[in-house]
Image 1 (cartoon, rainbow over the protein chains, first blue to last red):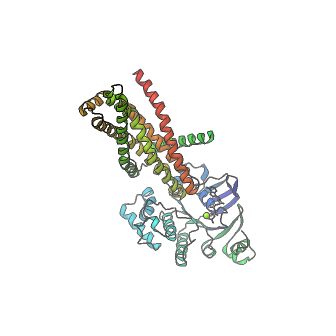
Image 2: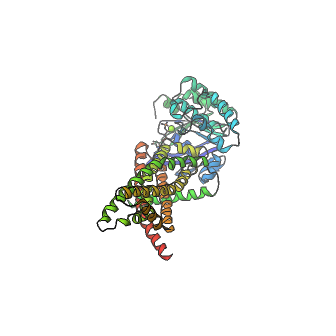
Image 3: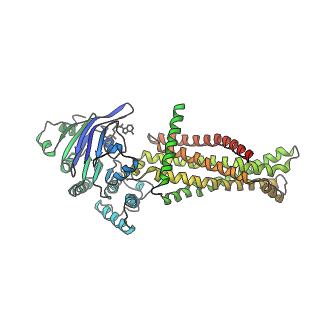
Length: 241
Length: 252
Ligand SMILES: Nc1ncnc2c1ncn2[C@@H]1O[C@H](COP(=O)(O)OP(=O)(O)OP(=O)(O)O)[C@@H](O)[C@H]1O
Ligand SMILES: [Mg+2]
């Protein structure tokens, strides 16, 4: 479903990724963990073609991302959603219009159907009364959840989550975790970037540790529990970066 | 220095090609175009009005005082009409628009880039040129020539005001003289200049806005560059366009 091979990426003379290789099967959820600034966001952005690799290939649904024109990318992005780390809401549009954006663009739903869909989505996120608010009137955590809702509302078959629970309270973290699990049960393929180990262990089928431009370790949650010497344990206890 | 010039020219060319491609097919967001038309056109009316009126009045006064010495006060309307329609109207209106609209475009688009909203437009399967650039470029293309025509009228009205109050010219004489001086070619010259100038305003400011790289300082820098570039293009472009229209007129 998603295949990354020999991916490398630099900004100026700063090499972020040296040689990244991994694969995510259909319906699977890969947890991507790694220190701040190791390039997790850059990797997700590259998968939907917002950044282009210096070398290596990324294929999504058997399509080589870098061989696609902007027009074909637009097609692809209707099926692949990226949940921005900071929400990236349109600050000139209110919450309702932010959520309606992709629906108006890519579906033939009528206005009442769109309204219906937005209200039921917002309810799931516990934000039912915020349709009229502008992004600047929302708290950081609310923006984050609206961003998540905006990415999920199109029912994409691939979802790339960039720290969806960072900065959220325990109640909302649990809620988001359940939403991600629900989506996974419907067959959604996903990559979850997170620093929240309990969430990653509950949700992901496999975990990958990104360090110094490479995936240095890959294992399932069971293997993680069984191997206390793994680098990942050092990472989450702050003993290595 | 020359490096940045080539990067700018290359970038604007690519942007223009993309706009041309987007115009041929695919969705056109009419509501965004109307919104920009309001922002660019309607909201600039007070500024353009004030600029045109004061320049018209000052010019009329200066021409009057200058020509009075040679007994040429009666030529003020003729002189005013020709310079306003061909030069002052298009150039000053466009310069004011570059300051108001160009700065607005560059900073607004720049902030969208910095807050990843432009990325979000792409990530949600839409095109930033269609959503952001095209409505703004088209709105300028429509609004600037109309505002120039408006400025011409206001400028000449300001001239008439001063002409009759300060210079003691008969208003009827002033008006008739103005109308009889102007020829169709004068209107066309001003109009075509305005069309070019509108592109000189919208394209650089959209380009600089989209190419903001770093935070708030980047937005500030891009805004400055957009206004400076647009202004220089308008001033230099004015010379070459004037020259071109003279040549065309001689043929015709
Ligand atoms: N547009 C850019 N220009 C220059 N450098 C960039 C750019 N985008 C990212 N980088 C650099 O790439 C590196 C990785 O950034 P990225 O945002 O992917 O980190 P991250 O792993 O997501 O970190 P965090 O956990 O803090 O979100 C950083 O060192 C950053 O400085
Ligand atoms: Mg990140």
